[in-house]
Length: 424
Ligand SMILES: *Cc1c(COP(=O)(O)O)cnc(C)c1O
Image (cartoon, rainbow, N blue to C red; front, side, top):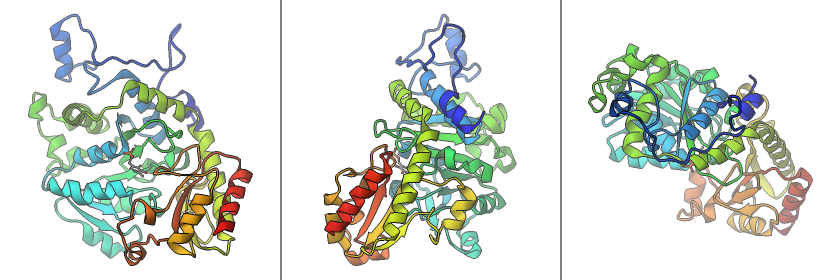
């Protein structure tokens, strides 16, 4: 099946007389006729459902669809993108471990790695996505367990050279995790370029309507954990909390990662979405391939329009000829990347405020990748505590606006932007 068909029909094929739409199994628990039958589930000797904190049939149908879309072998939904990022790393990197991460990643992922996971004894070395081979090489340590990056970084819009980072990871015997939220599998499939694990905040384009928070982890099923037995004891030695099961032995390359993530981390952390949330996510997925095309068209048109305005200092959009990441974007995302555009207004913070307050269609929101256009000025909101000099140093100048192009008619969107620019 091609991507569009999988968006619409993947993950669920009803039998004669069964519901056409995926059923919402809104049940915390499941009935068994004997204690022994249920015991077999607890031992992972049989597959089946027993408690929705670990697994739920509706969630699994949607996870299977996303796994197919990414070209992976197994997937797991989480209650947020943050939970997906955390679990994807923590599943293979525990206290004493080390992560190599691109510095151009979502702020929440940066904070998770740089502050919270450090408190758990997990160190991260950040490297620029544009670092030299020597710098990348120097970031690895004997205890490095994983490399982490983001296809198109939110909000920097830097494009990751996935092939290069995958090769560096594999040369050191560790997997590459890619957060593919902004590109979605419609525009980029990181597994085809060497990624081993793919994560998403499904809150963004996958849901696409600003309705449901969620995340997903997809495993390519290609990383050979047993070949690096000493590095991944959690997968390659017996798990006492599951009667001595060795995940990589029992479930192989294709099943080990997601089974451990479900049986151990979901069991213990419980960041599970409700079935009704997964149902809503699936409604979004059914039109993802149609919507992404429009998001990209609108993003491209808005980026080109802004680039032609004398009130704009510069525009960042990987689809724009001359953008720092244009060539890389063409390699990995030939049909376009996403609908998010960043631009810096010459008049700084004041100009950004005037511009945003003058918009009529696009709303000021802490959100992106929604059907409705929205925008944010980091200097006056998420990065409010920083001085103008600090903002400049961080590559987030005071006049920077992150504009997420929705699905509106482009003429209306451009007129809205033109009208707001006139006020500046
Ligand atoms: C929003 C976002 C996240 C975090 O997802 P939540 O669903 O908000 O927890 C992670 N990565 C990227 C790229 C994001 O944009």
